[in-house]
Image (cartoon, rainbow, N blue to C red; front, side, top):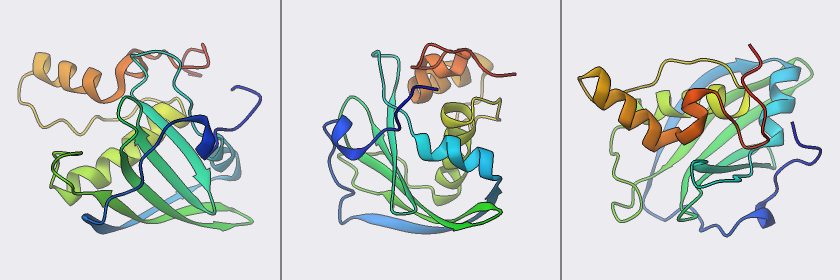
Length: 157
């Protein structure tokens, strides 16, 4: 992990648009997992598709190329770690094409697992064939889909 956590000024970002949806989430994280989540992610190459930072018990998830905010994930932090409690999801069709709250709820967990916790997770594919699923996964997470991460490290497992 790099020495410094990501912060909002590390990237050119755009705010979550007025057109967004809200979903309830319920997933717990240990203190060690929370520390990695809070660290965020600063892209280093074109294949790094996301910029992620933590601010005021919320995880902000932006597409790296456009700076568009795709998700703002709410957490409740306790002495035992944290719980993901909900999220706001971009629904501006000029910025983000998905309209499926269930898909995005699964995508949020996938992105946290793969990008921030560096562990394998099931990709919430929308494509039928394995080849199309692999292309879809590459377009969503880039080199993280093959276990490479911006800080130059490989998956921890």
